[in-house]
Length: 187
Image (tube, rainbow, N blue to C red; front, side, top):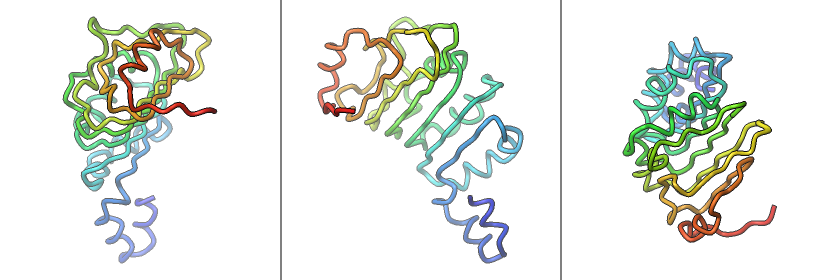
């Protein structure tokens, strides 16, 4: 939207360039991968301190983490990552301490025929995400049922929203004991 506003007239261009609110919600899709890849530094620089980032449908997963996630992780307050199993397995292995300001994450995983390969000791990427209140993990269309277990290092006691869709939930009782702030909502 900020790009479009900047083309109306010079006055609107100055407003669009200088207002970080217009750059704080960023959506990068595979369809405009090359354009966005060339403009990524400008977009993130103008985005201010709190970024809402959506990354979807990538063909080049090795490029995503170093380009879009790792350099800006400390500024993300909301992240939606819709990807395949290859990138998700790399994402959950990121070191803790990156997502200290993250409040909400939605992971949509197109699993296909693979399986999550949890690192020994579980996924620790969110271990230091003390601001995290919403955690959603969704199977994006696989017919396979995989298990989701409580060995993810999440700030369980601070979560107020938890969505696990398309996965068999293992040890539900352990998750509910850890996540005491959750409230039951009927669909």
